[in-house]
Image: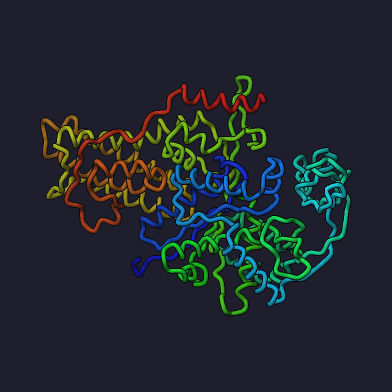
Amino acid sequence: MDQNSERYLVSSALPYANGPLHVGQIVGAYLPADAFVRYLRMRGEDVVYVCGTDEHGVPITLTAEREGKDPKEVVDYWWSHMKETFERFGISFDNFSRTSTPLHAKNTQLFYRKLKECGYISEAESKQMYSPTEGRFLPDRYVEGTCPVCGYKEARGDQCDNCGSWYEAYELIEPHSKVTGGPAEVRETTHLYLDLPKFSDRLRAYVAGQEHWRTSVKNFILGIIDGGLEKRPITRDIQWGVPVPEPGFEDKRFYVWFDACIGYISSTMEWAENVGEPDRWREYWQEPETRLIHFIGKDNTVFHALVWPALLMGTGEDGEEPYALPYDVPANEFMNLEVVVDGERRAMQMSTSRNLAVWLHEALDRFPADPLRFYLASNLPETGDVVFSWREFQGRVNSDLIGNLGNYINRVLSFTEKYADGQASRPEELPESGLAVLEDFKELERRYEERMLAPKPREALGELLAMGRRANRFFDASAPWKTRKEDPERTRLTLYVCSVLLGSLAYHAAPYVPEAVERLQGFFTGPILRVSDLEKLPEGYRVTGAKPLFQRIEDEEVAAVEEQLSRAVRG
Ligand SMILES: [Zn+2]
């Protein structure tokens, strides 16, 4: 890496290994991170991009019990399923780990010991629901009852899906086990707690100082700190998870929120091990100039922007291993689904239990990754909730990806191949219109970069489309189909400038449609570079055997996937 490059550690939220990935997750934490990372790599920055599956916690044990399997079976299956789906979709992790590894257990226990040494852990009794018939404590999600606030009958143990209230499971009216339906009662149990209030002042100063954070994220967290932090239990009565290294806690495990974020460090260590430099993870976690960026869905904000920085502060306090704190926590909003119900188009909330979702692996069975990536990137929930619509997918792919970018690329390539022997070489001098379009491109590239680094890849995609329109306009105004007979020299100039623009378009399109840009390089030879980075204009470009990069999305294809969603609603 060159001396001037910045160092980045980028993570995407760890998905629970208990089911397939859907597009709502993809636009929250994966595609925006991947586009961002791909751009950083092209800029020559030093970046490591990690993720892995979250294999602990109640979502996993609930799935296992429902399916009559061992939790291990469940997570093994979904770990490989997710890994493969991410690969098919072109998510370019440097490492995709999992939280059930021995290394991760060791890291979690080390975090715990350091926090304890520094006085951030205490023990307390609490009330927990217990099932006398099952002979065990019931985690919140195993409990159901009537909401104490609104009276909704199927309220979950920690939150009501009807009115959104949060409460303790023992506050439910007529609580019962979700597994057996039998009654649940309150019992006392001992747990370990993280003393979050001790971090209040440091957290407030840290969050308040983050000028570049999204305002929504920053204000949300400051509001929570000002409302007063409470101690948080870090252990629970469950058998599946990282063991607690304390006598008397043999039957308990760490809470999944406690170990999940540590998974980013474990994944980076695994990466360092794999590249043969086992200590290199420290550069990304323990050197203050590293930019640590966690891409998440907004439901994960509290853990990443508040609890996780506290864990890093507390663990680094012994002076041996100070940790860098997150530089940014880009949290994305939610994605709803457009479904056709009785001939009407309606936006509905995804529901994985009703199979009302667009599963990524199924979408990839029908469409290549690039058009899906392009549409989803154009519809990222960066500033508010969005709606996934198959009809809009077709529209954006056919008009923007193909009608704008693809059209430009095809015209330049086929013209160069047909009428200029596939050659576009540097002329002595460029026409004024050529110089003007190159200048315009530099400005568009600057705008793109500013948005991409924000990181707001959806807004950056808007600038890419503006580049496409500008390039098409230049092609139209230069009218090479007219000049090729009367003024071949002029045509050569046009095609040369068009190729320079094409190199820039490909450069900026690569974070979104990486596979197409790779294919393009098979028949378009010449620098794929920003106009702003060209020290001098390249000598020339060659085109041989060009083919269209994208295929139109047909009405029948859309009708078929829309019908699938309608069926899920009809039930
Ligand atoms: Zn309620």
